[in-house]
Image 1 (cartoon, rainbow, N blue to C red):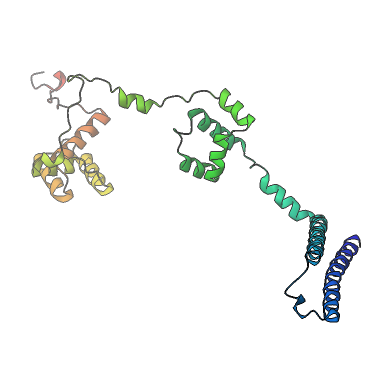
Image 2 (cartoon, rainbow, N blue to C red):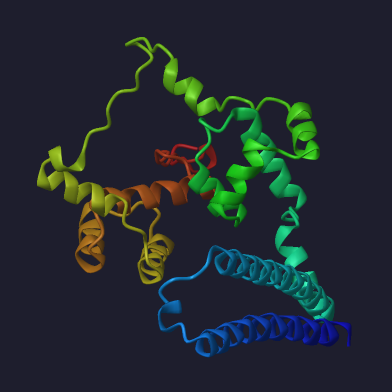
Length: 270
């Protein structure tokens, strides 16, 4: 209501000032017509000019007063509009100015970065690691909060990695301690490579059954029997011999056959 009354008073003052000015001009024109002075429009007296200047000055003062009143009324309106805003929008504006809430691991990582220095820290990778904006990280490193500064002061120096030490100071090795380079299979002849592959070939179940059947008949097979086993099973000769030797050692059979000797009771001359 006060704002509406002020606006109405301002409008009345404005109208009164202009009406007074136009009324004065109309009176001057009427006086000129009565006096018959046709050239009065061209020749105005100094008194009339002074009166006109005073009226214009008073009109301008009224305009300045109206402008001041408008400014004050606009200020009151803006204040009322701000008061009428919902609390949610005010809280949103306040939340924009509030600092970012960091977690403990983020603060610890920033403390290490602050301890090392901005020039030794990759801001881009640090922002990706902490899931923060680069502007926020730069602001925290330029103007760190007290808790971040305290943590950076209490943090120990990071230990130097052992890999870097070994890379910078490699151990000296003598020629005698160097291992001999292994012989590559590509350098071996074809027949040796084939023999090596056959020797490393595993025995299948059917091969073991065949060898055990022969072993039950004779613990020391002849060369002809071994040849037939190699022909049937496609196993190498050495592997077959090795299997029979291991089998005899497992059962305690002597390596060499003891010659048969008759007992004295069975002698012919007894």
